[in-house]
Length: 202
Image (tube, rainbow, N blue to C red; front, side, top):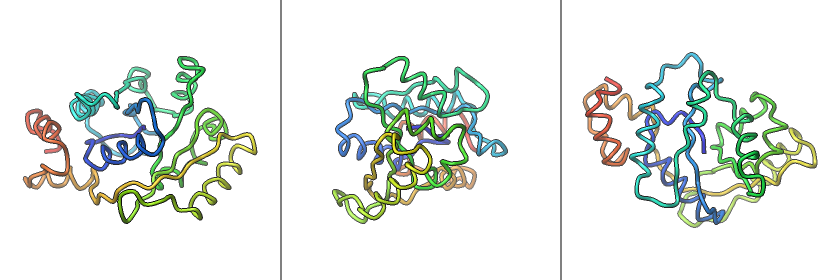
C-alpha cells in the first residue's frame, strides 16, 4: 500500500485492515513515496517524518510493516521499480497492489503500467456503505476490463474490495493543524502527538 501519507490517518488504517481481512493477507506493507511523479509540484512533509508517522501508527500491530524502499531510492517514486524489487526479494509470494479508486483512474499515466499489472494483483479499494458489504460486481468487471486493456490477457487478476467509509483526508488534517483545530480521531493518538511535538503542518 503506497502513498504520500502526509499524514497517515484513520482512513488509511481502516482500509488496510479491510484489505487484510478480505484478501487473507499474511502481511500488509505500507510504502511511503519519496516523491510521487504525479504530485511533483505539491509540497509535502519531509520523507523522514512521513516514514516515522507510519511507523508510530502501525507499531504493535503484527499485520503491518513499513518499508522505506522508495525513500532510500530517493528521487521520483515509481511503483514499477518497487514491485520489481519485491518480485526479486520474494519470488514465490503472491503480491497485491492496493489502490484507491482515484489512483486506479490514473494507472495508465504511470511508468510502464503494463509491467505494473504483470507484477501484482491490482486491488481497487472502493467505499462501501456498510462494513462487510459484498464487492460491487459491475465495478469488478470495469476494473478487469481496464487492467486487461493495459496489460493484456496475461495481466494478474485484479480484485475490487469494499472498505468502510471514512470521510477524512490528509488535506483536511493539514488544514485543521494550520487552523489550530484538533485532529484526534482523524489520526491515531500516536500520530497526533508526533505532529504536535515536531511542529508539522504549521
